[in-house]
Length: 168
Ligand SMILES: [Zn+2]
Image (cartoon, rainbow, N blue to C red):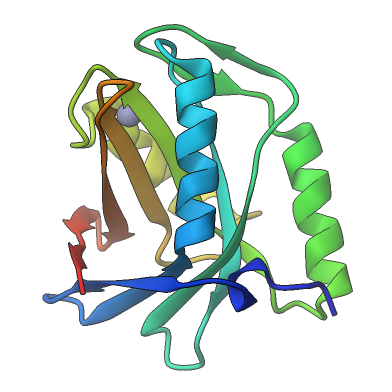
């Protein structure tokens, strides 16, 4: 069994009232993302979430993040090459007997807002249509704001819409 990183430290929960969906993530993991976002400022940066949904598909447990070795980023764009990330996902899937899977995306909007852009929306549409991705409800986290004051918002893509979560 792979070690689940959210077994240590404090967890934070988010709730989506219309879909009655929950997200559980550790503070430690959110900080880890924040540090990566700051490190790449003022350029965009991003990665993926891994974890699992409960049996009823009502709570997403984010257990870790993964980032890619190769990417291309500017102040307003972020593109990555997914070969190494796919390898990581495959080995996690094998190691955990199919429990730990891809859960979604995170990226930053340096000096911007944490709302999703049209490009972000289209990217999420492509993810659910991708036959290689084993997920119906992919998550999206966007970090916005300044280097000194960062904010984030969680979304989930469901039935061709992005729904925002609130802190629980
Ligand atoms: Zn974006």
